[in-house]
Length: 269
Image (cartoon, rainbow, N blue to C red; front, side):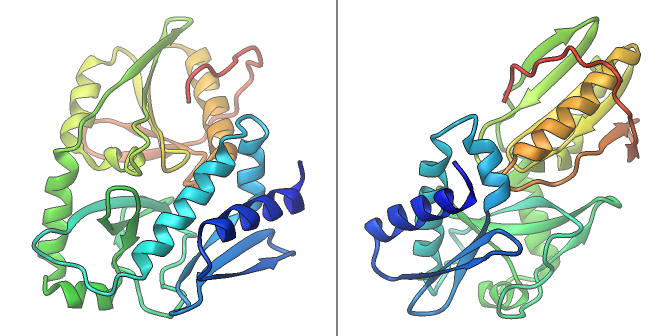
């Protein structure tokens, strides 16, 4: 499969589901833009990232089409009820757009040199990032919205899968609910994990749908973490950063690791 085949499959399947969409392809950036024909709102899919993942999992095309369909449906809903809206913080790379396609600024809080915090209204199967106009329509102050998002995040479940490799422990958080990387903002959870570590604690959020915590007790642990971060970053539909962060209980500090071990095969997703 190549970029053009992937593009055609996505267009074919989304147009089979609904007749209110238009699409355009940016050949240079290898991006597919799908929009509602009634209000011009839509989403852009980075096909190069999707193609890398599709090579290992052919179900990714169905996931992309489902995501497009749900997102476009929500974009057609003009009114959001502030009393019932579930709002969560989401982490994005600092290179992520700071405005909507229409030029409306998103509500953003600085996080690290590599990441920023955005905020989203959750619709169960999709969500919409909060911009200034949407915040105004909700009738909430920015401070109140951020407090609500933080409290909602702390109430999300945290299920962990553990893998030990050459005495180093790796913990994977992967609920696929859109907020896996956001759990890095749960400081209570991070501190609990810090209490368990025997070596240096590293935290990684290579893409939206995974959070990795490593208890690095020797040099091999650092090498493995570096390789995993690069691999997950390349496969994620919403990549964030390939850098890991050292956590000491007070702050996240980016660390640069040049992996040397080449015999690690990723078993977790």
